[in-house]
Amino acid sequence: MTRILHLLDHSLPLHSGYTFRTRAILKAQEGLGLEVRGVTGLRHYADGPDCEEAEGLTFYRTRGEAKGPAGLREWREIGAFSRAVEQVCREWRPDVLHAHSPALCGMAGLRVAKKLGIPLVYEIRAFWEDAAVGNGTGRAGDIKYRLTRTLENHVVSGADAVVTICQGLKDDLIARGNDPARITIMPNGVDLAMFGQPVARESALADELGLGDGPVIGFIGSFYDYEGIDDLIDAMPGLIAVHPDARLLLVGGGPMEAALRERAAGSSAAHAIRFMGRVPHSQVERYYALCDIMAYPRKKSRLTDLVTPLKPLEAMAQGKLVAASDVGGHRELMSDGVTGTLFTPDDPAACAKALAGLLSDRSNWPQRLAAGRSHVENAHDWATNAKRYLNVYQMLAPVNGVNSASEAA
Image (tube, rainbow, N blue to C red; front, side, top):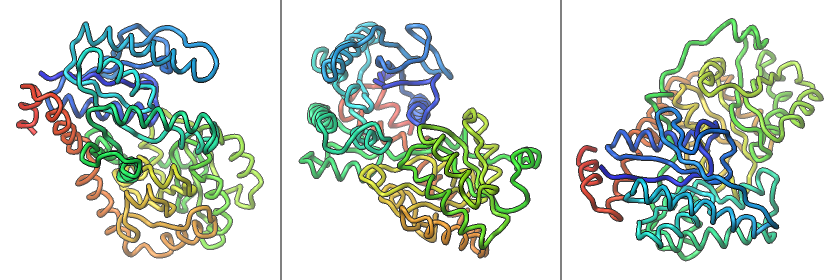
């Protein structure tokens, strides 16, 4: 059986969009007949043993601490991670190293791949310098931004194969001079076996949250500035002017939570806005069930134009309408008027108009819901999409395990 060792920033039992995508990938690969394990770097902050099982998956941990000024600290971090990866490789003997962004993971993988002669796949989920700008921890074009980009370019050029989650990221890499033949797209997906059966709406939960009997607009996700939740809050006065019983349910948390709560409290639509806070991932379906439309008003930026989010796909899988800002990442996921509704980004009035239009005319809701569900089933189900990895691995390590897995697929 072919062995794939995944190099990760962090993993289960921590919960994040990053760990959920990792879980989906590893579970789907196991279903295809591959043997998979993961190893995390120093940024996995949860306590636990050196080798830990979480949700049936095995993860090794890097121990130690990287100190020093910026730059030197990250270099030491890469060194500690690469030593941990090398130790796992000598004990477990993987056929392929599969490093996932950020570039620190890729650099650790590149060192070990060259030293031990193991092929390396590098998977980019986002450009982390752009993500830092989007979440307010970095500035476009500063020294950290440029160094991160340079490091990423080095890993991409040294890897045996590259994977990205969407066309936007692939196009950007091609513009940097990379061969498109080396880059495979592995789109974001939903594990329909785990998250594909919507649950019934709980009237008691709706009453507890004070949602009333009117339509509910929902946002479930992390509260980062680039998500545009402030624009969604600012859209609510315009929406309730047309649909007075409409309510907004915000589920999640993050750096912007305090500011968003303050903004909502000062809104003329404050009575129509509910904050749920973070909920366990196992409970998320209960909150999807309360909503009629899921809204994703991402602000326009390099990050949101290049990267496709996961949440709109989850919403479609849960049988919800999706309204989203017209940025590149959303356009790659949905067709306006077919699987979603797109509105001008950074424009609360446009957001309110789109939501009000959907609520005022429900005649095509059944077709929209069916089209969204079909789109996820056909293009974003992990059980199907993960087969693309087999082609990448087969190209790098044509051994019996990959051959048999390909045939089984």
